[in-house]
Image 1 (cartoon, rainbow over the protein chains, first blue to last red):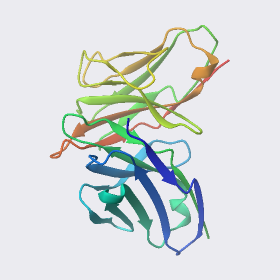
Image 2 (cartoon, helix red, strand yellow; image 1 turned 90 degrees about the vertical axis):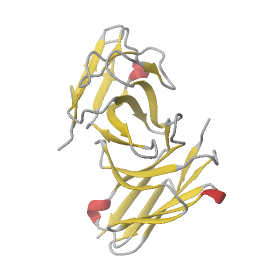
Image 3 (spheres, one colour; image 1 turned 45 degrees about the vertical axis):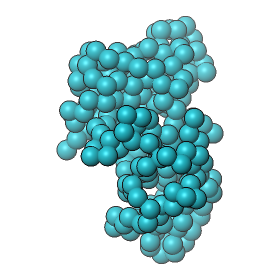
Length: 112
Length: 115
């Protein structure tokens, strides 16, 4: 079964500094990836989706995918205190097997 | 705006009691999901549904039942609640896109405490 691991478990950055979060997955046939954000035990909201190697930008959020290395990352440009939340990586294979597997999350704290 | 609404927001139950968690979506999505979230385990899939009348077991279905009476509603039922089922439960709806990939839309969660 697909294993999705995120690092670091927690990350503290200063407002305005780049924040970088990592996600590795075990199944090389995975072909779609999403980053979700969760504020304080609330529901998740999708930030960016990526399906091919390279990068995908959505506002201040950029996802980088390298399937050969089984790695997808999220970079947050100019993070603000309101970006403090848990960030979850979601991986699936699409097609007829579209089960979604989540990582355990990275807790991000942005200090003013 | 698409919405997934869960009720209740908070619930305290007694061991052995029956608990029903409700979820309603106005997205007109075929797929609906129930997850629980616990520290150290992330989101774990309990049950899911591909449409009205269908329910499927997820990764941790034991002790839970699900019901999908309509496109809009998906319930999670704990017939005999146990303290190990104390958790935060999330409902989500989703629809496959062109790549059969799926973005999920989540409710705000139900915090369940079983004493």
